[in-house]
Amino acid sequence: MAEAAFKKNCSSCHGDNGDVFVDRNWKHGNTKDSLILSIMKGHADSLNPVWVTTLKEDEVSILADYLLKGIAYRKTFNFEGDSITKSTVHHKSMSVKLDTVAKGLSSPWGMSFLPGGDFVYTDREGKMYRQSNGKQSEIKGVPPVYAMAQGGVLDVQAHPQFDKNKLIFISYSKLKDSAGVKLATTALMCAKLDGNSLKEGKNIFVALPWKSTPIHYGSRIEFDKEGKIFLTVGDRFQHMDTLPQKLDNDLGKIHRINDDGSVPADNPFINVTGARPTIWSYGHRNPQSLSIHPETGAIWENEHGPRGGDELNLIEKGKNYGWPIISYGINYNGKILTPHTSKEGLEQPKIKWIPSLGPSGMTIVTSDKYPAWKGDILMGSLRFQFLNRVHLVGNNPDEQEQLLKKIGRVRMVEQGPDGFIYIGVEGKPGFIFRLVPVNAQMQ
Image (tube, rainbow, N blue to C red):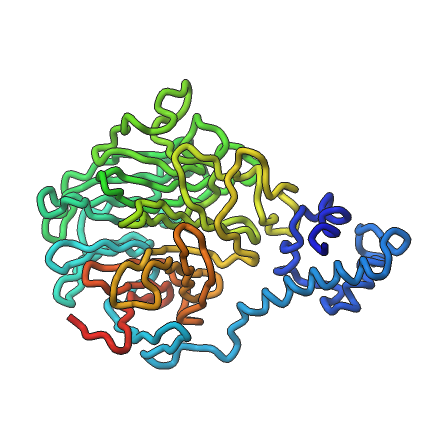
């Protein structure tokens, strides 16, 4: 009833979802009385219409309660008094110990495990490391990057047959100069890892068009069971641009390619005239993570909305996920970017987050070491600095749980072949932690 009242009376100016108000600074107060006053009589410094002659008192009360519900939800992300002061952290679902794996980093962005127990990881500002028997060594031969804003060395994945071919794949922000203007794009490089050096590096994917904006690269890499590569590419922060909706470019898309950069013959748009043949899905804003369920093959993606409207999506072949035609978020200045949250033919998110969590790296837990989390999604929150657990029932999200509150900006989440969960936390310094269940034994 309250939602219907909001859509009927308020959606023309504020969009059809009242949740846009939850993250707002309330100039005239956010108590029920102040909200009723604002709705009924307005304010001299506001252009909002006055509803005192249009709505009944009980209708205004319902609208105020509707807004208060969203405001109360926003407060659940205020973690005053919460902090991680000990290495063991207790949660309702289970307790874990933080085991420090690497430190002295800035932004540990991507991580991949190698046969034999070694692993490699990236530091966004331009470096990549190999960890072997607890020793950290810098890897040489990393491509030059545009380490500005959200750019740099981003994700890394070892080839599923790394033990035979030694291939490593790195996504990064590639820079070029065009008549004195710096342009950048998302690129995917393939190279052979020889000890602590990358050799024979070559780009097998370079997103087009190049843009001057230094953000929204997307840039997660994932291999499926067939050895195909999925790569996310952001919209490059072109809010009112329709590039994510057009198939003649690479921006705001998830791409699928072979490990040599060629195009799989069963890609959805390979025979569409003018379409980029690598596109798997489109209508994305800034896809921050991608995870393929190792048992079901389901492809899960999270992405940043604008102010509000972050999403968890189940990705399907050839589907359109709506940006910027539909969105549950608003512009950073409070203006409505689109009045639509749904439209025929456009996919709805499995979860929408208002306020924005700033979701980042994620993994699907399959390890027996975490019985309470097995089968669930774990993902980082950049904005509110915690690890978010999404309980899955089949392909449907259920309850969520906030873990490791105030640990820092969780950028990377991976499950290792040892069965343990690893998280990368940004900061000065940044860390990589292994989450060890309190009763688990280290291998």
